[in-house]
Length: 159
Image (cartoon, rainbow, N blue to C red):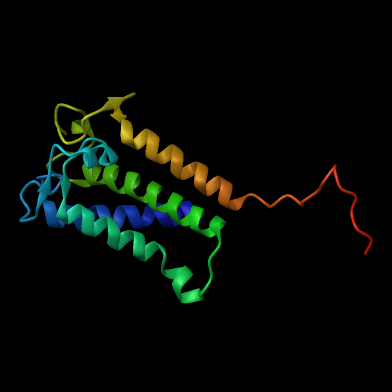
């Protein structure tokens, strides 16, 4: 159910961003600051860091954390599930932005039409592969049951 919800969120937000950006991806025509040629760009897959994306990424991270704040709960497993879900969300959203966008469509999902994705492998941006893998690993770990603590060195104390 979690994956379906994340995909739905990605689809809706892809359409929101299409309304904001139009066919000019990566905030190319938006009145926002840009950080280019910085070591920080490495964290964004070599893409320019824009004020628009810095704020929207922060906003969505906070939105995904609402259940923890409303419920007053925290665990590293829940945090891993949230971070993994955010990672999957951004890849789904980004891909669907191209698919749904009338200026692109699936036929233009390639490096010659998408210059802001600098590195490609297997027909997709490398950051898709890295991010989706990390996100799925975090989600998978978050659902694993904790194994009972056992020790082969010290005997168990009597109850």
